[in-house]
Image (cartoon, rainbow, N blue to C red; front, side):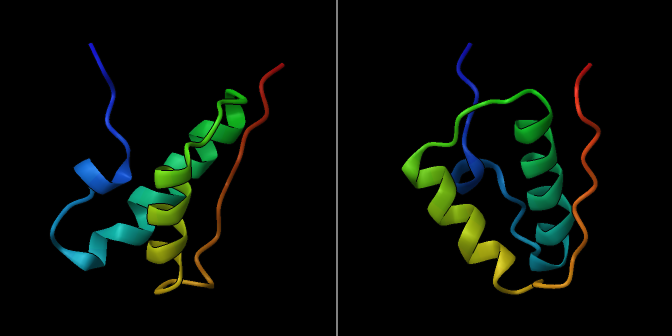
Length: 61
């Protein structure tokens, strides 16, 4: 099973992008996962429309 990056799974409704993108970043940070160049580009593009959206990260123990 292959997981998809944000360019493939982001909802078409732009109003949901901020929540989806910040959750994706929080999960990647929590689990110390890498980010592909395509992923980074997609995340940065979507975050540009919601620069004040907080990202809550719970660090793994």
